[in-house]
Amino acid sequence: MAFQFGLHSVRHKLLAGVLLTSLAALLVTGIAMLIYDMRGYYATQVDDLTTQAEIIGRASAVGLQFDDRKFATDNLSLLKVRPNLEGAAIYNAKGGLFASYVREGVQREDLPALPGTDGVRVKGETLELYRRVVENGEILGTVYLRAHYEFYERLWSYLVIVLGVSALALAVSLLLSSWLQASVTRPILDVTGVARRVVDNRDFTLRAKKTTQDEIGYLVDAFNDMLAEIGRQTQALETSNQALERQIAERSEAQRALSDSERRNRTLVDAMTSLVWTANDKRAFTAAQPAWAAYTGQSEEDYRGTGWRRMFHADDREAIENQWIQAITTGSPIESEARLWHGPSSSYRVVSLRAAPVLDEGNRVREWIGTITDIDDRKRAEAEIRRLNADLEERVRRRTTELEATNKELESFSYSISHDLRAPLRAIDGYSRMVEEDYGDRFDEEGKRLLTIVREEAVKMGHLIDDLLAFSKLSRITIDKTASIDMTALAKAVAQELLRDQNPERGRLDVWPLPPAKGDAALFRQVWVNLLGNALKYSSSRPHAEILVTGEVSNGEAVYRVQDNGVGFDMKYAGKLFGVFQRLHKAEEFEGTGVGLAIVHRVVTRHGGSVRADGRPGEGATFYFTLPVKTSDD
Image (cartoon, rainbow, N blue to C red; front, top):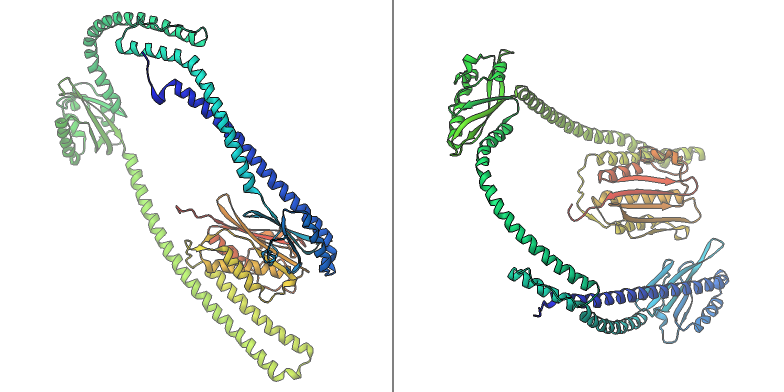
């Protein structure tokens, strides 16, 4: 009899296994070769373009230095021997187009108007490279090369080859699987047929036919031996079952006798915690209760029967009686708290009363087993804790009220001091201006210089008061930490404002893409103003200032950096940078109030972040601040 198992048969699984294994091996090999070739092709193209750009840059350095455009154009015209190069250009140090070359059929307008940063870019079917021309540490210009990138042509060629080889290999695998089905699966299917008949008919005398002398033949022999052993075991099991039924009948009576004892012991274990007592179904003490006598001081004559109830406080007896009546009706345990007389201390103490009924076969109460646990000390401790908590809450409420009043007074004091300080400053500035206008021609140069110093210092004092007010206000204002901030746009906007009056030839300030943040945009604008302003200020003494703003997300935090090549600072004073009035340079060298970095520290920490700085004297400085990354679930 033949069995058809459809897609679940061993034959089909073997066929699927061979085909899938072959297909997986071919796909993995083909994809690995494809990735290796594409990476190798890309690396070759990049190395070739880099070499060409280096050669052109070195050859054209003289032309850039002496503004010889023809010399640079002649160098680019040599690229005609490279048919894959579509265009090339050389830009001077200011970013202007100096010389260019385009292959026939390519529009010269396709060349970029301005040079990009150093690196390689893939745009569709072209590969672009920018490389700076540097001579003796000076940037002379930039070389631009654009080549045809045959990525998709090579990709389709490899795909056609992989698909062709895969189809051929699958055909060979199909032929091999057909041979395996004839030599492997047919004997297994015969064994399966015999097993099905044994299961359906419970006939253990059936045997499978052995057709091969290999492992499958050994499997058939083992299967037949197993059937013979199962037949013998089945006969022995039937005999054993008959003997077991007789033993079960003999033990049933013994188990009934043990069940009452087991039920009583289990109830006793559940109830046992401290003082243990027993009573009959009428709730009377009929046996000696030494633990009860030791706790209450009651004699055996007094507590026998129901005399033990008199030791509970008179106000608690009615509640205990009602609970006991309900427990008798429902057959449920009793749990209650009451006041019980304590003989050694001659006082009532709070106890936990637990009693569990022991039931007979008819679910009637046969006796009670219970415990008494002294919880008086615990109750007193709980009451004391509640009192302390209430006292603590009241003290916290008072301290909060006092703190709010203090903050209001501090704010009023700050504005009052600001007004009181500004009045004399305005007077100093106004009168000094009047003196300069009315009597300036009577002063010599030294007098005029001193009068100018008075007015400048008055202005600085005004700025210092403004910074102090802004710093103190940061501790009191409420910050919205949920608003989204485009940190790239914000930093670029601040940079444009600060560079508006700067000479572009003196340096550059680059802002790379920054991670977004959440918080108060106005406060973070002040952070960027202070950090970028400091970078420009302390780099102003350099012939060519270099300031770079970067950022990234790392370990669940957004990290922002402001790096400059300014005068730097000694790291042993790094702990003073973010304090109020902490300056590491003389006021005559660099102006400022010493509050800017303190404001940066206060804004960032109030947003849950941190601030730090690295630097070396004469080698520039890098300022970092981090902010927690807000997820969609926050």
